Length: 169
Image (cartoon, rainbow, N blue to C red):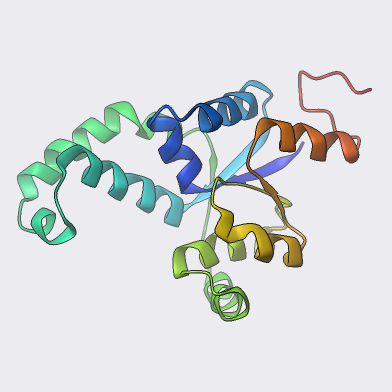
């Protein structure tokens, strides 16, 4: 089965009803790919959800625990179920060290570097993201950046891998 790592931005954009993200994630879940995330993705999605729902800054949120509690409850009901579909991968000390190297080589910010390092460490060939920051690093590291359903289909067809539910041609 084909394994894909889901970047936080594709999940966030899905929640915002971005048509590209919606189409991409619906295709992935419909065809039963094995999807993965790590704690970084969960944290980014959760934090951006809280900020978007409250309109508050990090420092304002730190001072307003009741607002965070309220929003966490809403997150649990609305977006958390989607985050429970993918498999969670642990971020190990080896991944952290690898992420520093990735950051040094490509100038990726820490969370993006941890995401790419997680893919490398676990041998996940496909990174699903709408973030162009990954283009150069993915290409040089042998990881395929999937930013559309068309790109996903093209990559799998080239490798002769049908998605579960698709007929092999």
